[in-house]
Length: 304
Figure 1 (cartoon, rainbow, N blue to C red):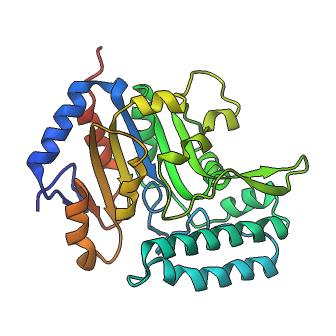
Figure 2: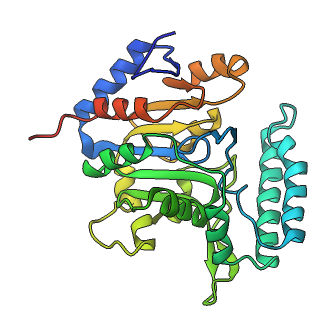
């Protein structure tokens, strides 16, 4: 067990330090123009525990303002969620079940009359917070022109509203790849755009669903790489909290990838699989400080 980063008050695990050091050197030597960050959202950028309770997910925080439909979505959760983590269901069958779950949930959101105002209110009252150090990481990467792709099986519109309300600023270098809603002129949800992204299929094949966050916020200064140029960035810093998150870089022919895993719960039962899967593992709902230090090692010092 090796330490990595400023491990004050939390623990960090590196299974193969030599391999990690080789990857850091390769990415640093290739230069910033070859690097991108791919990050999961829930329990990766956001905290697992908030105010002593399990933090809400971007999907779970949504309240339609219609108790009947909130209850229907909860019933779907109670049925499908155990199937998502069942060790006995084959992956092909499980993938179909996840598509079924997501599509039924989305249909209930449309049928139940969800509005954008419901999203704003839900985020404002949600028990959700970013890990300490996320803003500093985003600023560090924005200053150096490094794109951040936020991948989520949740809802892009909610994630963007969480970014607005909790960070109080926009970042030109962020794209959200998630399920995206379409609203009518009165702010009512009418449909979802494109292919359904669920917990078992989120990867860069969904890149065409990404939208520059700054466009949503009216910040038209600067440019964000389009999907073609993002695919030219063949070195990756990947952040996730499930081993399945490693698949987020599947659609990219990457040269070098440094993967960081956040193991937030069931540490004793999962540490061995996590340490073999990820280059670096942070335990116990760690802040983002160690990732910021890692990112600084991946990039050459800025000229003064």
